Image (cartoon, rainbow, N blue to C red):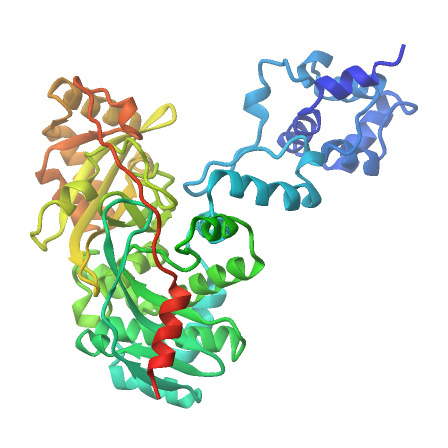
Length: 526
């Protein structure tokens, strides 16, 4: 009796399991094929057939699967979907903040199927192609833990590893490359971007091929931000030359690149446009290039060590606060960092999660039940202008993360208050010193819950965290010990407090197009 249809229906993860077992036992496909031949030469898979099985393109006969099962000393039923160990064998992405999932059965995730399904999915979920592009880029960035040596090298070749840069030094590079600067004067535009709160968005600068940089005169009053903007356009010229894709720098959380006034136009933008993907990628690369140009790795790392990673030590090297804090995450030897740039009422303009913590609020659309105890919310509501360090206990999956962050409230060039926040996951640092981070996290969490959500950190735990802070040479980890620790929930609905916290957000239509603003600027100049 032919059992193949049964295996086809039950064996959706069969190839994944065989591949996982093979790799876990340090066998090549050739090794496995030889082992199967030794058991039953007539039923053993060839290397090429084994490859197709693992990739989900072929289903083995029952006899062939029995041979493979004997190699690994497993029951035949173990390979089928109803196996209780199935979940443990689905390979997950292990780096960054975006959880991975096994693309099985593989034939359903072919390039052709994804090309058809993704535009439909984005259209029905109201996700623009540009938003999807940013998600892809963030996954790439977090997987590589913000390490892009090719961009570092190209920036250092242009800047000769100089730090700090005077504004005249940047002007000289612009002139040497044959680019010209055109100055314009434009006030912020009022933009309602998906939330009922209207914010101001200021077009600071943009690049137009073959080599023109349009710069808002307001930047003359902020040389640190002017240096950064010019550095991004230098990056565009170095990386892409004089091609036709332009780039724009704007202040404000209104991500208005592909948003239009009319609802039908908005719906049309919810597709994957290859130009959007390429533009978003180039914006990322130019931003990274600018950070590497203004803060070359070796010199910047020495500066961070001298200042013990103080987040407001950007002034001596003439770098904007946002660029300075983002650059920390790619230069530090410790890889478990996150960075948020948060606007009211609940919008993340920039995100990086090398430590994999959950998002406090959305960067594609507002989260309906954010936990109000994230440090960025506390700092956003207090106009002190000073950094605030915090030690928190955050639940992620089935474990608790001890994480430390430092946040500061600032105002962008459009006049919008926002919070910049960097932080690290302390669990790996504690574990490297032979300390059980879960035991410490559970102790702090229990005290916080008993005290209504926050509580002083016990002295014996303070001592251990202080020791780790000094090894890492990050001053704000130790500064966070001066405040009560606090429990943060991934979402408000999971809040352990009684009564639970709640936070509701409402929505509105987006308003204006960046393309229109750029055209108005160029039309206004002689």
